[in-house]
Length: 123
Image 1 (cartoon, rainbow, N blue to C red):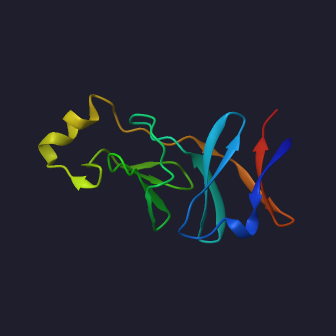
Image 2: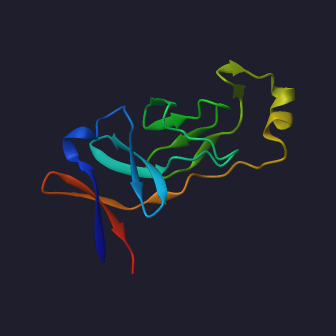
């Protein structure tokens, strides 16, 4: 199993996100309850970046359409509920979703060792 260095451990902080590049993908790194987690920096709704989203309680909210995701599992917790931070009425959410169903974020396996965060690359 190969390892790709993503960041120094000290730069990945609780309640914040840090971006990293790996194998052509943009990742978000964040520390949740002491553990470093990594998910793709791309909302499955329209593929827009999530890195500027609000982080709270181990989740990140898409800054574009309000979808919320677990930073460790990638699980979708809430789907398209706003536009640029303005709440949408319930009846209009499916219109803004444009037929796309709730989807999780792609999750990446990472490990901390010797003061660095590494992506575990499977053979």
